[in-house]
Amino acid sequence: MRLFSTRRGLVALFGFLLIWVAVLYYGILPAAALLQDAAHSGILEFLFPRLGLQAWENWPAAELAVYWVVTLYLLPFFALIASADQTASDRSRGTLRYLVLRCSRIEIFLGRFLGQCIIMFLVVAATLATVLVVVAFYNPDKLAATVAKVPLIVLNLELVLAPYVALMALVSVLAKSARQATLYAFILWITVSLLVGYLQAKFGPLALLDWALPGSQISQLLRLTNWETLNFAAIPIVHTLIFLGIGAILMRQKDL
Image (cartoon, rainbow, N blue to C red):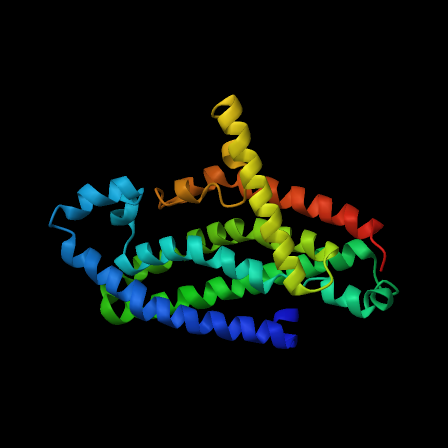
């Protein structure tokens, strides 16, 4: 678990903790209160469908509805930062040469990826636990229904985050530091975004290009609250497999 064993990882974790406390106290709680107060005013029924958030009423607690929206956009950025240094620093220090004496390059590559996925699972579980505490304090009658949604949320967030972790596994093979890996990831993201925009402008809307980037299914997930969210599971799974496949090939060919 490199996130807990390096100074950069601990700084990233502590920074996210501070950000999450601020988001919870200044974002989720006020937003949940606003939803509850304005539920019968008619404003939300007019505004939210235009924002793609009309499904908020189907969540058992307003806090959980806001959590769903916030984490779908916030956690991918944390995954990019927290999982940047999977193999980069080991390569620059030369320690990968010693690690491959005990296991193969692919085992190291996939092991680091799985380790980061476990870390992101712990982050999801910890943030979700804070929301459950809030619901238990303010709306104890809704706690049981909220807990019943936990497996759905955890599974979907892990699927959403997996391609971002896999992307960082790929660029970490090419980079010499976590900072360089993050830079490569953003360059790759911008390049693919511009290419997709160019192709759609030249050839018109293409359904396949709509799903070209990781997280492209998030706008659809915002409209769903039940297990039909898994209808979009193939998108992050394909992204993850592609990134891991390319990364594994590069890992085998890259000089240590």
